[in-house]
Amino acid sequence: MQMRPLFGEEEKKAICEYMDEDGFITEFKRTQEFEKMIAEFTGAKHCIAVNNGTISLTLAAMAAGVEAGDEVIVPNYTMIASPNSLKMFGAVPVFVDVEESTLCLDINLVEAAITPKTKAIMLVSANGRYPDAGIEQFLALCEKHNLKLIEDSAQSLGSYYPDGTHIGCKGLVGSFSFSAPKIISTGQGGAIITDDDDVALRLRRLKDFGRDGGGTDVHESIGFNFKFTELQACIGIEQMKKLSERVERKKAIFLRYKAGLEGVEQVKLFENNVSTTAPWFYDALVERREDLIAHLKGKGIGSRVMYPPINQQRAYAEDGSYPTSELIGEKGLWLPSAVQLTDEEIDYIIESIKEFY
Image 1 (cartoon, rainbow, N blue to C red):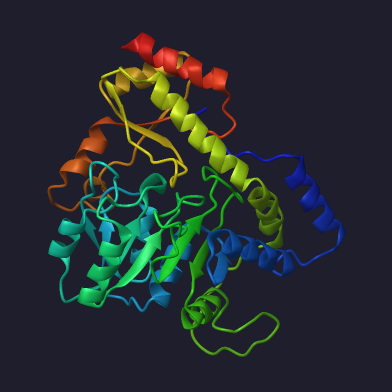
Image 2 (cartoon, rainbow, N blue to C red; image 1 turned 90 degrees about the vertical axis):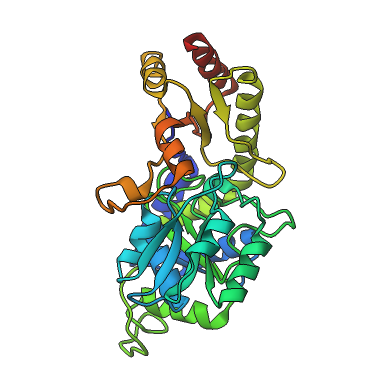
């Protein structure tokens, strides 16, 4: 398996106990508890849970003041949810290439792409990594050009900046995803964190029909319906209890891959500083990728091609030269990354890769 979520008896018991309470299922006290756990874990003042990670980015941008027609700089290497979240309300994603070392936005290319229409930068912390330029340089760039920094931290729960600040807490808003492949999962789900009281209020109104809270039909502004559910929250609470253990296991798996694949010149693992980063997937540039995938499949081992350049996808079909994104599109491969992999299984994967080359 390349990745699969990990649920246990604790999640099953939590759902059954909730159902015995005859609750309304829509978000309420357990959602509030889940939000509080995320806020406390990350150190954020506010956490707002929503129905998925794409919507969390949409609402983050809207709450930051991005409007239809505004440009937002987005990496050309990312999950397509990042630009799609902007397309949802008519904002314009502007693609910029990423650093080859981290796969995060290249700050020099970002500055060159800023126009009078640019309203925000969406910084994706790829696989829990932060850019080589440093987050402070991005904050300074935003201040210089009067831009908002939106942190797409979908892959970064449990990862930190060098000063100990959780990724997602430096920008105006940070966004997390709890879809099936993430380090914790609620099936679908997302969350936005912020320290700004006004932004938090806008987010809560945007996700709930423009009202300040449920149970009323008084609407202060235009809003929509992107609420969470108590069943998701029951699962999320139990998943959060396991997060710290999973973070350590993610780091240990990476170190085992790194040691085992040392000297295999055809496989270049992306570096992760495990003192700050809990790798989400184990990403690598590999030679003869398609043949390697077939070989691993024959051994019962799943792998997954990394994101292709977004500008080359038919959904966007935009011209441009993005050398790093294109390199990933040709050679990028995610190795098996499930947190439940045993050391013996990892060693089997390593030996199978060595056997191929």
